[in-house]
Length: 124
Image (cartoon, rainbow, N blue to C red; front, side, top):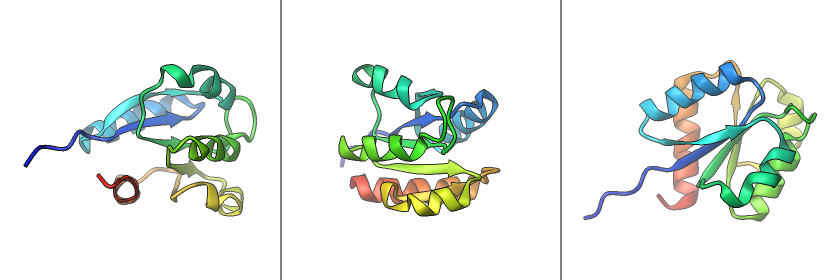
């Protein structure tokens, strides 16, 4: 039996303190932190160079409330995502774009359980 490669998780978030926190959590859980960007525009511009299996996406980014658009855009490219946000109403209104929602402040147990959904969806 061969060992599976850990999932590469990308984070679209404009608050660097939250990014550092989530990066540490992901690595502690055995995932690969695949980087972060602060806007949907940056994601589109840099996408060809990015290596990710899935993404965590905030609703409000440096270029506005573009997280839902980013989630749809990634989904169209075969990249599943989760919202990581305090914007409950907007997240629920756009829930079809993502596999789940993680509420801020981020609890490690909730992050872990939602990442298991991603692994299942990806067949990992």
